Structures are given as C-alpha cells and as structure tokens.
Length: 68
Image (tube, rainbow, N blue to C red; front, side, top):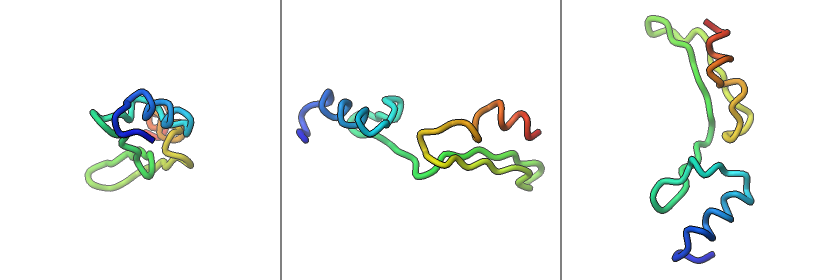
C-alpha cells in the first residue's frame, strides 16, 4: 500500500469494514473495544461492551438510556 495516497488508504479501510469517521489526518484510529457505561456517584451501574468495535448496538444511546 502506498503512503502517498489517502484514497488508497480509504479504499483499504473500507474493504475491512472500518468506517471513515475513524480517519484522523493521516491514519485511522480504531478502538480495540467500543463500550458505554452508566456511572452513578462513582459506581458503575451498567457496562455495555460491543462484540466488535464497528458495532453500536449494546452501546447505543437508546441501549444506555434503557439502562438508566
């Protein structure tokens, strides 16, 4: 892969299912895990961890609001 072509980098990332929102100037930031939690006075009341970092079902706003 070329280090001179952002278009090639974007095509490669897309082929892996990586969303373009992860692009940061010259690279993609890919979290190892996507998660969300509800914390009440320093105590974790709910922790939702996705099966894949590209998913947003368990950690969606709707899922977290339902956990409140």
